Image (cartoon, rainbow, N blue to C red; front, side):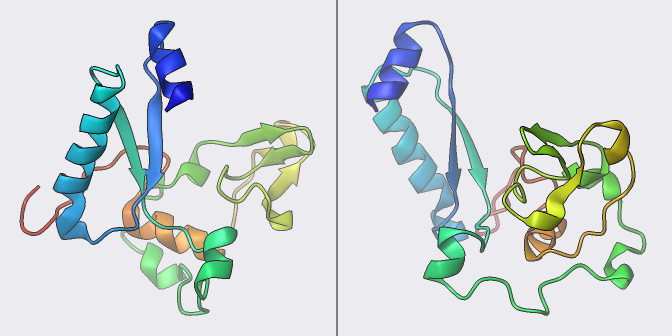
Length: 151
């Protein structure tokens, strides 16, 4: 909260990013509570970004991670708009080179090359996290969630 207070005090409007670990029907109450806490700490118009749970990193160690069935197949991509996936139109540049996706940054096979020219080609969406993006759309943006019959 100290960091949020400092950012707001200096004119910034940070986007607070969190991972959904609650049941969908709890969404409205949890987000409202979170916004109230931020408002109590000086952030009058809080901006929240909620990501679905990705079963990688610490979450993979905490749970089971992705199983082999949680992969995107060619059949799933029929009549699917690949523009909903970040990897279809964006890249991440790091000191190691150009990666297909910020979520897969630590995966060795996410490195597409040393420069943007080498990273112009396509990418096979075979990682478990790709399945989460497929289910939820471009998860690096805020998508609305239908919760308990509400939208």
